[in-house]
Amino acid sequence: MEAEKWGRRIRAFRKLKGYTQESFAKDLGVSVSVLGEIERGNREPSKEFLEDVAKSLNVTIEELSPNDVGR
Image (cartoon, rainbow, N blue to C red; front, side, top):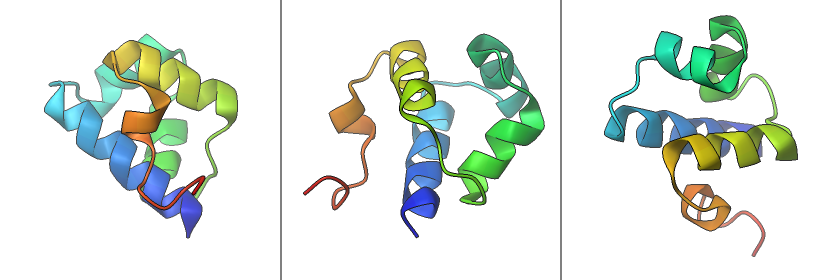
C-alpha cells in the first residue's frame, strides 16, 4: 500500500513538472519499466531513488511524501 502511495505522488509531481515517463526515467538513469513499476505501486522505491526523484523535480522528500508516510 505504501509503495502505491509513493508511486501516485511521484507520478503526480512528474506530470506537474512536465516530464514524460521516458524523459524522467532518462533523467533519473533508470529504465522506463522500473519507473512505471514504481509509479503503479508494484515496486517499493529505495531511499536513494526517492532522493534522486526529489532532486530532479526540485522538491523536498517531505513534499513528495504521501501524507501518512513517516507520521
